Structures are given as structure tokens and as C-alpha cells.
Image (cartoon, rainbow, N blue to C red; front, side, top):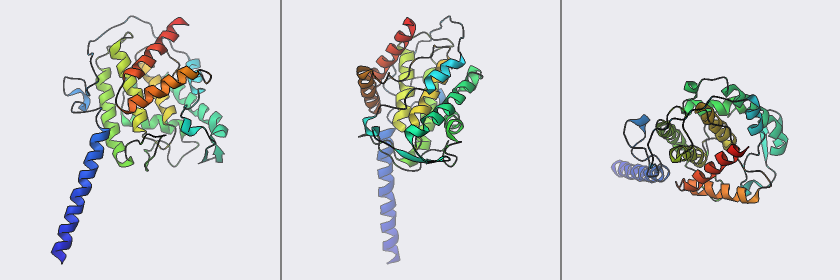
Length: 279
């Protein structure tokens, strides 16, 4: 009887491992076989097509107002969130609208601090991303700010990876982003390689959805850091609330990015730079 029980247990463990492997493969398609900090010579994933180094000539110019402007933008446009949500914070149980000014201050403070760092201090690592989240939201949510989510979640009709896969996926993601960025040069011009790197950085982080909440805000802080690191102008990272066409285009691009298709989000980034260039 003991032998049979051990055999059955072994079979169950084997089946569970098989299930975990299938899930990992599903959410690991962007990384493929070539991440690991650039040990291999090809850009990871099937979507990278341009690896040419391009150097631009541009002086570094960034102001504290840039951080303030972005921190005031709305969190997201997900239709699934068009209802009053409440969350427990250090201020008590508050609605998101009540917490919005406090969240904006935290984001603004962190983004302003990024302007005091050198580009070399803005390397993409899991620790860096977790610190962005922690520094911005720890005052309101001391028990979980800066920690990966410990539960499975659903974002509209999209199901992000299981929570237990997040640490590995985030390490792979950071290695992959750094590898893509390594081909851009010190001061890149706006070309296909840059657009794809930024689209991947934004879309993949949101699809992993590593934190319990405020993934949109931490993604914007991270993108702000990347733009500053490469001496690129700050751009508007979400459409205006009244821009229905822009909102739909952005949401559709994020949905496509969930399926590892970066092209629509690359087009969003192209328009962001184009709009900024006209101002």
C-alpha cells in the first residue's frame, strides 16, 4: 500500500510540473532562448528586426515640470475599471479617486528623483523596478509596496501570468530590455530599433502585471527613466481623456502587446515623438 501511494504521489507531482511548464512556455514567448544579459548575439524574441547602432547629437535637457506633468495623468483607460474601487491604505479604506492626489505626489516625487541620477544609475533590473514601486507607494501601502503580487489576477479579459512565475519572468524581462537597449547607442535617434525597444518595455511589463496594483503608474515611471537615460524628450504616455480615438488605439495596442505583437504599440510611440516634435 505504501508503495502504491508513493507511486501515485510521484505521478501527481510529475503532472503538476508538466502543467507549470506549459504555463511558463505560454508567458515566456517574448524572451525565447536569447536573453541572459546579451550572451547571445541575436536580439531575443522573434519581433526584433533591427540591431544597428545609431548615434544622435542632442544636448541633455530635462526639467522637474516634466515629472509633475506625467504624474498627473490618469492611471489607465481600462473599461473594466470604470467603476468605483476601494482599497485599504494607511489613510483608511479609500476610493481610488480619493487616493489619486496622494498617488500623484508619490509618483511625482520619484520621477523628480530620477532626474538627479546619472544614466548609468538607470539600468533595468528587477530591483530598480521594485524600488520605483516601493518609493512611490510605500507611505500609502507599507505592507506590499515594492513587492510582487502574491495572487493571480485578471485584467479585463486578459489573464496575466500566475503570480508564482512573476519573479522569473521579471528577471527575464529586465535582461531582455537591457539587451535590446544595448543596440541603441548613447543618444539614439527615433528609428525602428528605438520604437520597438520602447514598445517592448511598455507592453511586456504591463502584460506581466508584476505588482498587486499601480502597474500603469510604475510603467510610466520606468518609461520616463528610459527616456531620460537616452536623452530623449518626455512624451505624453497616455492619451487625453477626451481623445476617444487615441484611447481606443492605445488600448488596442496594449491588447496586441499581450499577444507579443509590438507593431501597434510601436506606431503609438512613433506618434508620441511626432506630437512632441511639433510642440
